[in-house]
Image (tube, rainbow, N blue to C red):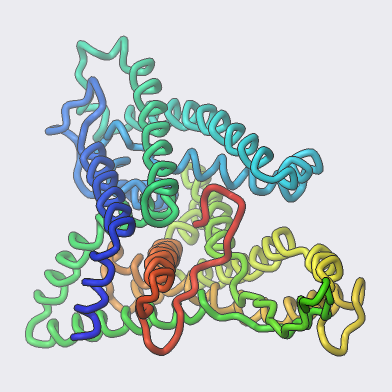
Length: 444
């Protein structure tokens, strides 16, 4: 406890770090305030309660911190920006002109960022139009003010698009002058906003069972802590490949000759395979209005169904291998090592090095993919064991992966600031590692 208090004092004594923390908290407060402002033409007192429902709408509402179901001016949140960023990230991998642009350095990254912003406006406009149609569904239609109906579609589209751009601006300011990746921080705040209500619902559900309810609730919290600890190990787990750099004599000084390590992450794909798998799994639910496909839609609507969890796990494993193959290029790593006079002991430079790195990556991707699939289906298992649906989402899946990853990234930045000023790190046993860095403006 004494060590923890001293660490807090060290953090607060660094002026730059203190300003970053206060700046980030201030922008988060502005964002949370905006999520409670209703759209023009909406009577907030008549809005239905109970959240955004299940499926993809429930996922969007979770990422938006409840703003989606509250018909807020920030209902779309950061998701259009995330979608545009993911698309641009894939384009820099698959489309040669964007690959060339990315290799131009800072000027190329600025161009990609600008294209991402333009694409965000388009995506936000399309999603805003779809959201207006959603507000015409039963429950939300009654909350619309009749006298404003002729302006409602136009004003809502403009306000929601402007709201997304405002959230994008907040995220970029947090990234530039605050602490952590702004987009990830905003998503994490939206997810955490649901935690207190979910905890209360779970407590009320267990307390109604009688004397054993408290014990079950405590066991659930203990299991949740254990899952978080295991997820930290999965995110930080690496396979170190030894790399030796050749000695160089320049004048009277010797350079190189040091033995270093090339860290290969067990989970290089991050949360992306789960997001892709969820997007595909949502498609069959669109067929629930057809009589012949209602059974299939029912299976894909029930996250605790055995068939759903099995198909979902297989898709997560498949997307993990696919996305890892897209973002991980052994040939480029081998070329960079050769260019910098580096080599792996016992392996010839060039193509043999690329083959060796690729084989190591294949070996560690399989257990990483299986563990990621287990994390993805844990909420379904939690529901089958009696955990309420809202609280079960914190036992795994996208929500927990994003929260743990963002917390690790933020703690890593704080620890870096401490070590730069010759303070002790946050932990005595080792250094905190964040997730894999990416050129994309979003690292969810």
